[in-house]
Image 1 (cartoon, rainbow, N blue to C red):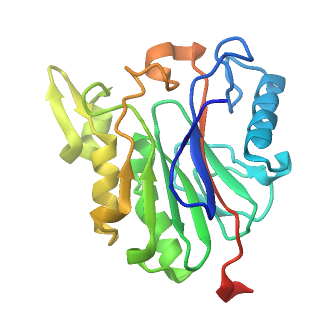
Image 2 (image 1 turned 90 degrees about the vertical axis):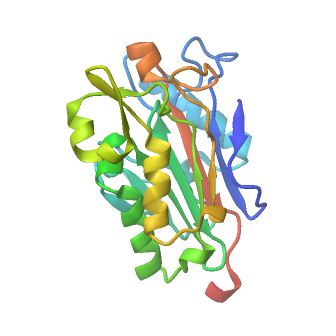
Length: 243
């Protein structure tokens, strides 16, 4: 299984899966049921990821994503509907499924909390990233100076064509292109992090465009043939202050 590591921190398991159909037919490993997959195909993908990470399958937690701004604090597997997951449970891996939307991973090792966020244009318009940071600082008492943020590859500002609906709510990050616009989700999310108090030095961005780079799944490029990647993060340890 092809995985790109997110944070270079051995206290974490973090990263994102890539397109890999060496074991399965197209779309290869895929983490959400779609016209291109079956429930069995998806479950086999999760089992393969669990083996790769050397964790129990039951420790990989995802939710039913709806392009909203609901944020769930998780301590076990769940069937909930949300677009962001937070956990302080060591050994629990939270993940979000992606195919052009941006996966945002966050952690604060000093208090032992991690988050995985699914932010397409609707999530960005609803500031799901800013709302997650607010929960981290208010409920978990993190300091913004201690929060590290990682942004996955997503549909880029050079190729992500959008219409009037997106322009109306995210005009600052839209560039005119004839009767449409190009939307820069990466920059919009970075700006939301800045507004929430996260310094630029704490933000890492994978700048690849999922639409043009075939290492990544893209609904815009492949339509219903598209698979889904998983951006994931989990704690390996229990912080000293919580013991």
